[in-house]
Length: 183
Image 1 (tube, helix red, strand yellow):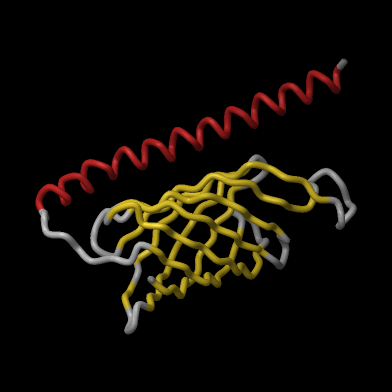
Image 2: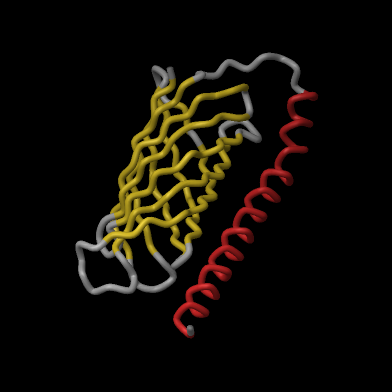
């Protein structure tokens, strides 16, 4: 009986945290939308951009403690219009984490080369309550992030980026460099 109550309490607490992160992500998008719309109205000329963009991302993942690990991933964006895109993200964090992230990001381009990201997805990681290194669990994750894309020659870009991942067990900070290609 007591174990069942503890499990229900943990589930309610986890749902509350995910609801909180989702509200933060939605409010962030709502705060940016008026600026994007104002720029769109002010600047009627059609800007040239690539509909597709793929990038290799290399960086570091760390928590608020002393754990960190090399992160490597790929992302893809399909630009719906000049200020919003939708895509996919696969990222692996090694070192102390050994996490695999699979997410669907919404890319918002509020001004020139700035990119804001909000993504929902799943994370596969080692079990927190077991000492067995091979045991894995899956959990939901919400990622928010910001990047600035510097255009290079022949459709190439380089973008420093900073992301915060919110999950049931921890908050992670992911920062790195993305090298991308627009087509």
